[in-house]
Length: 104
View: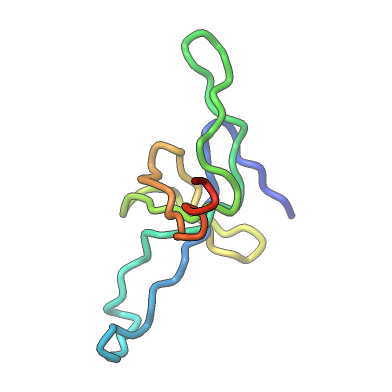
């Protein structure tokens, strides 16, 4: 099955947090918070501005993003837990040092 979001919606797969602290303490499932970092799985075509022109999204498939704690709607697509949210719920894109060097 393939899912294509509409307008300025983005489909995100949560990236699971570490199960150990830096000191080696294992965090039980009941004490873990849901991660606020994820990978963009699919993006919509964009939103329309006041003049009716299509404004493309700034994020793309494969981007690693941070999003607000309570943002998005949790859905299960093809047996996988995903989030559908508006692009405005995304706080930013996480870039690695290698990506930053390539852009320069």
